[in-house]
Length: 356
Image 1 (tube, rainbow, N blue to C red):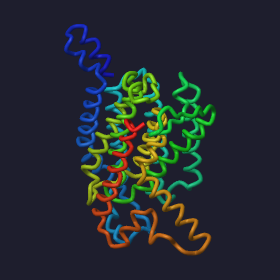
Image 2: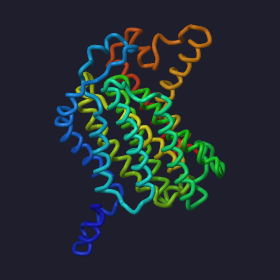
Image 3: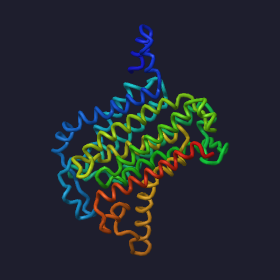
Image 4: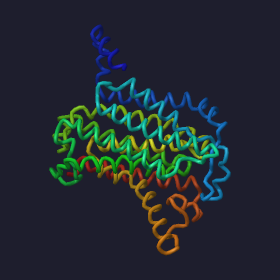
């Protein structure tokens, strides 16, 4: 939105032309989203406090002390992301709109589930929620497939190995669906400790912004043997907005949390990360950088399968972060150590930019 204004002002004074640079607009997006989250956070928390939080009966006993902490804080994360993106992104860009659409659609599903949890209806059934996620995920994947304007948009890129890419054809749709829906649910499973999920999200969104920028820059993409996808670089603004909004939310969500993001935030942010990885063709790199999300999800699957087949549990409690809590690790220690793991994985992912 502001790009139109600055383009007009540039005709009057060349200095305004600096806002045409994507890197500057990304910095502005970070700061704008951060400011919005910090500004609206206190009032949002006050309004959300009347709803309270439903603490799972099957969680650690120590979490019962968190009862009454407001949830659905993801609403001001989404507000900050959307407003910042609309202000600083080129609004004719289809990649920006599909990422925003998937983010808001999954956020709407999460809001519906959160709201029902705070009423006697106790939330949506897992089957219904997954059905809605699947419909939205398939719609987004199908749109990206039919709107693809080059072969690079439908290839599976193998990191590290130079010039290795597989043309997916219609298989792009199920892959994109799996990445978007899978990442959304993985982030939701990870959102069990104060600041845990949002910390990972900020790190991964920041790293994905580098991949998006390279893929959208013809010269950089050629030099690094990356697929060149015209227009995808504009998604850097979305990544920057997520990082800024996430940092603003972390101000209130850090241990001990004043507010939880709820499904409205976790499902939306996971879908956003998955969609961004799909549009810049870095699904495998997302799998690496989101290793903690993967471990959390796998721990739940293994726990369920083991208990149903043998009657025994592999972990003291799933997801994995609860296992560490029950081993005696204080909650802040679990959070920071898992952040460190994600930081290392993000650095490994970024190394694939050059190691090819």
